[in-house]
Image (cartoon, rainbow, N blue to C red; front, top):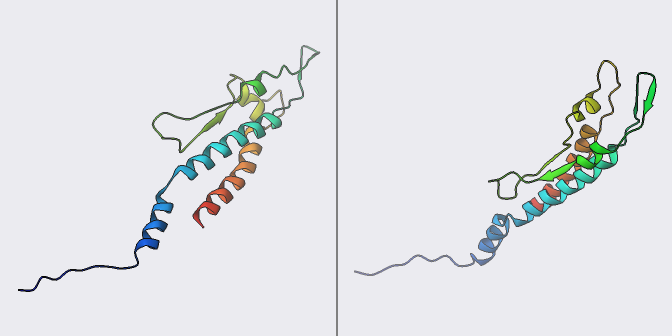
Length: 126
């Protein structure tokens, strides 16, 4: 009985291409870079006008701008970041109240960064 074997030649380039595509460290870098850019963009957008209270003008303190932080949730291995303001009244600034007009700073930063993030990921896929 003859012994036969099966071999495939020329798989080196295919294996290298698959290994390159399976390396996700570049994706983690894109996520971290875009997260830090979004934090800076959100801080730039967070320049408020101040408000009137009992007829007296109260200037902005900058607390919300300083509170905007970036963090990576546990267990996601670097594939996500969270950028958010940490003042209890930041939603009032973003959406407004019946006494105060909205001064959005989260949504404009997110919408601008979203476009860049998608382009960066598409560039990785090519």
